[in-house]
Image (cartoon, rainbow, N blue to C red; front, side):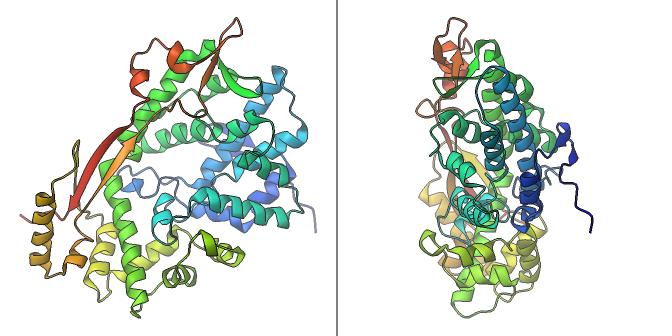
Length: 409
């Protein structure tokens, strides 16, 4: 059999032609664990708001590798020593940084598994792949976890100006059609440098950094924290919570074998072992969609109604407020639901609920974006910027929401 060409060129709608830089990267991409990301939506249920937002974690991961290649090439050009082994480890780490996401991304962290963050599952996947690839991912894991002594390498993976953010803002902006997130990633990468083993950005790029931070804030309010997206995700969390509740009572809820496992078992950090990981790797958006299509006809009113809401995009009404909704208002909506649908208080809470969302575009406590001046001085971007709005971005803005059924005219 002829050997396969593993140095591929791909066509990406954001960057044009991008290359798979090595045979190892190709082999990791080919692995079923990574191929699963083709079936994991990058933005969860945001396509219910922005019809074009059907891009996947697979797209995003490849885009991040492309940006990492650029960053390594630029830093080497400026005299930063990065060995071939370190360069490949950086590419592997950014390729796999999101591999732990479950179906519809963040919704699963609060439903089928209990308080297990996707970063923790990503690390488990990386450790498992390290076994498959003869310990060749050890350096990548060390950089990913922040244990490698060269701090700037970890900052390229995860910080307030990393390859992850540079890709997802530009990519999500493109697929949603919201131009506010269309940052100049090329210029930001071109202006990167390393001083005292920490990532800095040259002062010539100050306006590009300002644009990046403002874009991030706008994208969160306009896209990631859009009220319709919030209610859709909350409904999905409640669909799975209800299914788990029914299964625990011995009531059948048809689902794929992989989803059935997580509906039947309580999975936490303590028991998320290799076998659980294998089952998790078989789970994707399609399992959830198929299950909800089945559950529309379920005898349980709550499960049936919640599933129908998502599948048919007939969602709850949602209102955003600066203050928490009063207990009286919540009680009023709960009583209306109980009366209308003849539900218990516990069942009614699936249809009437509150929560909060917060937006912090920049934090000065950790991994600051540091500006390198021509005289060698280094300052936090907030101190350097003459853009008064940037100081406001260091404050957390919190909004409160209440969701309840729409009234029929």
